[in-house]
Length: 541
Image (cartoon, rainbow, N blue to C red):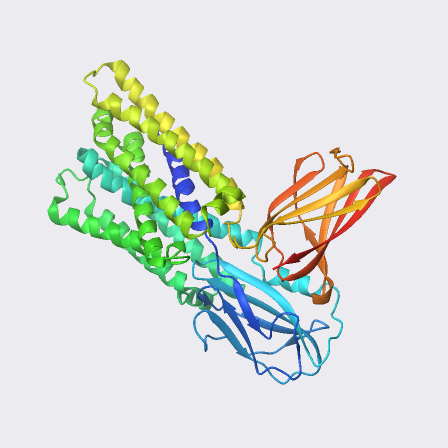
C-alpha cells in the first residue's frame, strides 16, 4: 500500500507537469499604447488617461494611479471600460504644469496580473522624487507570496480535477469492479475536496491582488466579476456538485453494481462541462486563434485527466489480480492520451509564439522541446507496456515486467515535472520582429558585453559577459548589474542574474517596464583592490 501511495504522489506531480506549461507559458496582456504617451510633454492638462492593451483586461482597486513628482497621489475615480474591454480609462482633474507618473495594474483574461508605470508632463518637465517610478512599479507588482499561493491553488485544483475526472472514467472503462471498493470512493472524495480547496485558494489569492485584502468578501465578489474569476466560481460549483453526487451515490455500496447508461451519460456530460469551464478560465481563450486554443486546451485537459486517471487506477484502485487486465485495457488509451498531449501542447505553443524559430531560439522553446522529448520517451515505455500486456505470455515474470514498465512511465512523468520548473521560469517567445541587441564597453584591458533578446519591455532574456580584451573568461568575486532610465525618473533598478559560467551571468526574467534608451551599469570586483565599472546603453522597445 505504501508503494501505491508513493506512486499516487508521483502521479499528482504529473498533473502539475502537464497542466502548468499549458497555463503559465502563455503570454499575458501587454500595454500597447497610452494617452498621454510615456515621456510626452502636453500643452494642456489631459481630460482622461487611456490605456490600451493587447487583450481584454479586468480592473482592480486603483487600476490607474496618478502621482505627482514628489510622490503625492492625485484622487481619481475608479477606472472603467468606456472605450472597450481592452482599454482602461479614468477621468483626470485639471493638472498644474509639471511631471506626473501613471501607475497601472489590471488582470489579464488568462487571470494573471499585469502592471507598470510611466511618466508624462504638462507644460514643462520637472524633477521627480528619486526612485519614484521604481517604488510605484514595485508597489503595483504582485507579491511573491501571493504568486506562490495562487500557484499552489492552481496545482491543487488541477490535480484534484485530473484524479476526479480521470480516475472515475478510467475505472469505469478499465476495471469497473473497482467502483464497489471503498478505496475508490475515498480517492474520488479526496480528489474533489482537493479541487475545491485549490479553487477556493485561487479565488482568495486573486482577491489579495484585486484589493490587497485576501479575506474581504467584497474582494471575492470583485474576483467573481472578472472574466477568469467567473469561470473559477463555476468550476467551484461544478466540483462541489460532483462531490455531493459521489457522497450521495456511494458507488462502493454492495447493492451498487453499475452506474447504468443514464449514470454514465451524466458522468460524461459532467466531465465535458467541467473541463470546458477549466479551459475557459485560463489561457485557452487568449492568444492567436482563440477558438482553436479553447478546443486544443479542452483536448489537452481531457487527455491529461485520462492519462493521470489511468495511472491512478493501476497504481491505487485496481486489485493486484486485476492490474494486468486493467493495464491491457488502458494501454491503448494511454498512448492516445499522450499523443493528444503532445499535439495540443504543440498547437498552443505555436499560438503563443510568432514563429517556430522563436521557439527554437528561446529558453522557453528549448525547455518545451526537451519536455516533448521526454514525453516521447514515456510514449515508448507505454508501448512496451502495451506489448507486454497483450502478449500471450501470462507468467509471473511478465506481470512483474508490466509493473516495472508502469513505474518507469511514472518516473518519466516525474522528469517532465522537473523540466516544467525551467519552462515556467522562462518567458514565452514574443516580438519575433525585434532582433536581439548586443552592446559592449571596454575599460582598460577588460570588456563587458550585454546581449538582450528580445530588447522589449515586459520580460526578456539577458546575458552579461565580462572578459579580458584577449577573450579570457575570469570569474570575478562579485558582479552587480543595475539599470536606469534617467529621463523617466528610474535611477537604480537592480537586475537579478544567475551565474552561468566564469564571467557569464544570465536571466530569463528581466522586466524593463518602460520603453526607451536604458543605461546598464555593471560593477565587477576581482579582489579587494581590483574593481571596474562598465556603462552600456541599449534601446528597449
